[in-house]
Image 1 (spheres, rainbow, N blue to C red):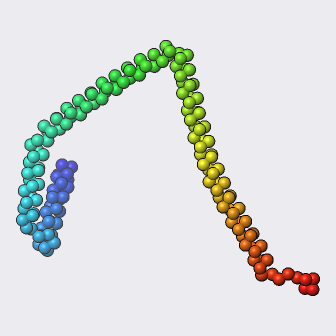
Image 2 (image 1 turned 90 degrees about the horizontal axis):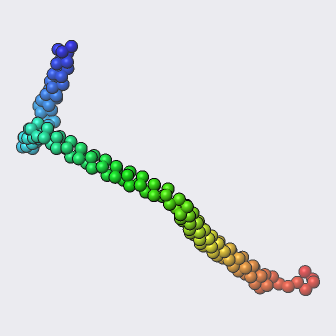
Image 3 (image 1 turned 90 degrees about the vertical axis):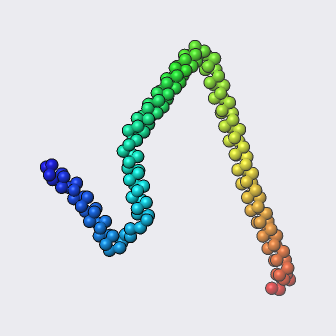
Length: 159
């Protein structure tokens, strides 16, 4: 199994090298100064990652733990504040209930005022359209009456 594993890993490297050599020999990929710069940059990047990755990971873990500890302490403070506020509201009892219902009534009144405003605006718009329709109907009727009076000759009974 170990030799099969080594061969499978080695096969990937051999395939990649063969593909690269084929591309270079057929001039599908041309080696120039950009290739050398890219290789040097990749080497430097790999060196930096190998050299400093453990230190950066330790710093990031410490920073993450500090952030989580800060958030947890803030959450615990908020939970404590809310539990004390709930206890205070329970002690107030009827006054809190009165204020709750007063606020509910204010919200209901505000809702009804807005509902009435919407109703009146929609009614105005619909009344406008009805008035326009009646005006058009009256104008057409008057036009027909005028046309009939002008274009139809009166009949003297001998028609």
